[in-house]
Length: 176
Image 1 (tube, rainbow, N blue to C red):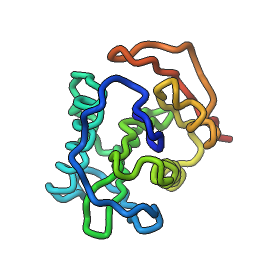
Image 2: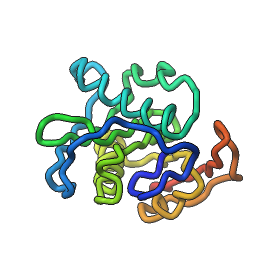
Image 3: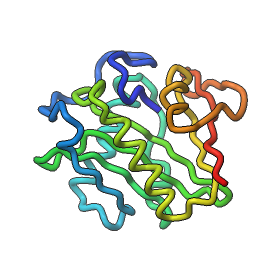
């Protein structure tokens, strides 16, 4: 997971997403939550392109982002859109059976530091609550971001591990 609101990139490189004129105020962004079948082709492409630009190019991690889980019936894509319809942030909510998994959390560099990642995570957690609020929520945070996720109630839930050369920490939000 990338540094949603960090002004620095916690992982590798510095190249990344194409320039974008995005509002500095996240209140001007629209939240959209949908399964892949409810996303038009251009929106899905833009979300996956943003993930590629940040994870593969900016963070220099060659990995198979399109892993088939985007297409699962229980998967929800959480998007932040500009007034013009540009995707500036996205997260993926997966139904892992015993728990929900939030992953592929990414913000375009133009909205980092604006509070957009807070809006994105709040929307992802709302999507979980709307679907089934009783199960725990898990994620694998890039280790420098555990404090960010901790603000939402996530706590470390296992030892740190390397994924694509980047330290990650498993985290869990326990639900009653």
